[in-house]
Length: 134
Image (tube, one colour):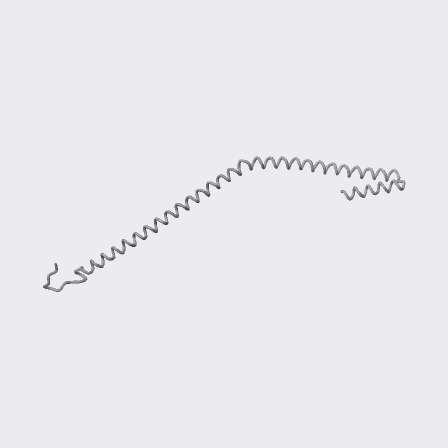
């Protein structure tokens, strides 16, 4: 469009140098008027686009204002809950490890008692006949 406008301006300048017929002048004026009309349409579209952009910006701000903060609060709460769960998990694992150690110690004691019982078990160690079995 700009190129066409510039071309028309050149033609108008040339027409001033060389006398043009009335028909040629009318054609140049008509084309110039079309270009001006097209420029006006483009200007109107640009202005409508600017108004629409402002409307979109306001709508986005209205949408984002409550939503973003709510989402941020939810994620903060979620992360806090995850941190609390991690802490509880670590404490539970520590308790399980402590109980495993206690169970192992008790099992070792029990195995010691079973070994002692096996040494005096009459099935495993029968006493010779006629001896005092007390």
